[in-house]
Image 1 (cartoon, rainbow, N blue to C red):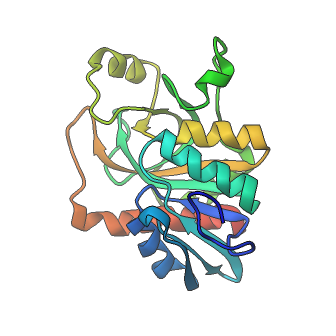
Image 2 (cartoon, rainbow, N blue to C red):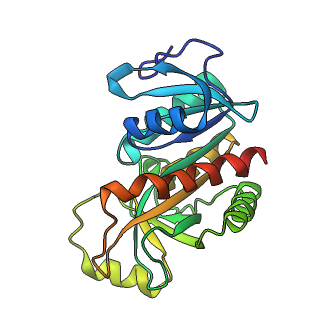
Image 3 (cartoon, one colour):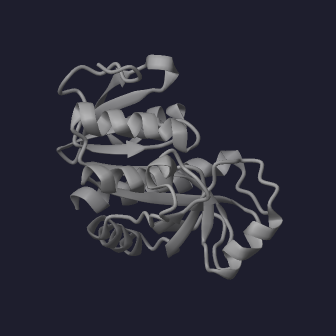
Length: 234
């Protein structure tokens, strides 16, 4: 048991999926895992452990933004021995070729600042995904016929952004999508020598203004969960 996770030793698997929303963690566990058991309810940040095709998996909510994710990922790695961590979440499209419901596999995650920035000071660390996970996720997505994009994303520390000039530069330099967690996940994975990946579903688009209705999100997000699981175990 840690400050933010109430699981007992051995209750968390080495493979952890990380949706930001704790209720999405509950939905994913009940939909995709066999015999899921709730192992964390501290502060309402739900976590569940079960099996997928005989393999133990934990699905733990991580909250919104890099500071929140940093808390859970640090404790999952240091106190519970997590070895593979995959963010499964929504993202806003930025590139023209990225459409609603498409899947983005984040090869790199750029950011203005994250909780690890104070460590690097003037050094611009380039956080990236684990190559084997990325390649396996690409194969899984191709096998499902999912429209998939692989490349750089932007992890923002603000939701209500007022920097259109920055967005223009992101698009200019090929950034595919924006979300709020992956850069810190990749940085922590590098620090602790574990594997990490972000598998994202485009739920809205910053340039076109399109958005995915809430009632249609579940099926699209389900595909993302399956890609993440197959990337680890298939």
